[in-house]
Length: 462
Image (cartoon, rainbow, N blue to C red; front, side, top):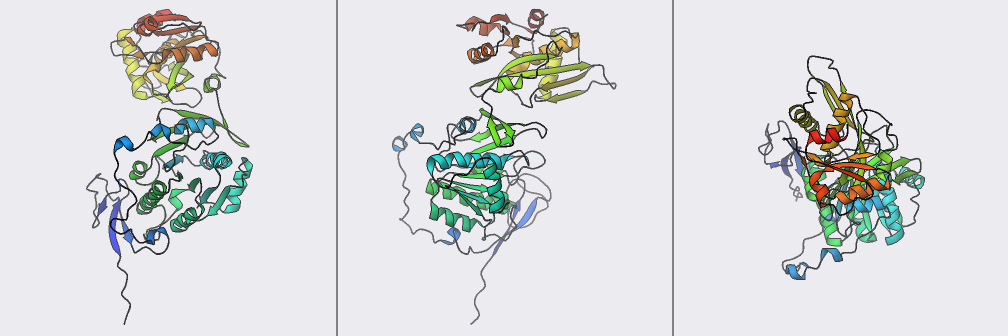
């Protein structure tokens, strides 16, 4: 008697949003993208964790409990990585059972950061399983030794089959499971190629279930598309607990780590690193770094105080106003929102009598850092005026404040920490919102000038 063939299930998955459709469609009914549906063939799972039988009814270990008995999240003991900048971004370390996604441009240093991170965890918490689907064990070992990741507890495994990786993880019970990268891992239950929408979603779902049931934190390295977003379906970022983005200019040795999503901490904190031959080194004082090469007496250069989470950072905003090369003014912005710059140009023209709209405008934040806080508005406006009048702002002067459409200077938060950071770096004067000045308890040794509108600010710095 012939053996019955195993049944397969075919569906079509949208590469943009992950929507499942029973048949192929030219346009996704959920996100509206054209030609985005790809075929996904699912067959019965073979060996490994995917093939284990489901628990019988009534045998589940998990039971509903009252929220009052669920415990306090602050009591959870986190795994420290041994890198203060990384621990700050994570929210004081890795949470047991969490799923972390680390993304970044090719060559930015994701694998280097991962190796140094795993080295710190191995020194404190024991064995680590590092599964690499892109490099051999020898290649991974070569990079790890270069950055000093030589702890015997760091176990390397060159494998792309998810079932094999999970089998070894269940046997080893490591302190952390790391996979580099999620786009190279495949599951036998799907016939699609590694890196496809179905494979990435399925593998991430199984790794999430593994982390939650075993309380073993899992770190996934993800590729980045040309647009700068993490490759794969958008649901990938929704499934994980934390999304970290490692960014940096190709010609600059400095790297910035940001938390785009973090269920266990703030998404406003950043970590600053410097890439060297021996690996990534922490930058403990970013303000001093970003101001190190600031030119003295240059028009259009202003120092502003911004916040990244609870961390004050002083950065240099540069502006250049030049005669237009065409019949209309050109706008080029790096590190700041171009729409915000356009708004400030309109305010200067209408409220301060400085019409720069017809001119070519160039605005840059030195050091490759990107700032989005409204407190840098006044600094940008002053830098534009300084370049337009060809008059430099005193190098020992700090500027910050939010600018409204009526030209008013609005108060910002956490002024004391901004002034304290400025005092440490030797600044002597600060132009700030008048409402903040009225509520301050200490001047931190600085000469403080409160302003209520853009005109007052420009007069104070004249």
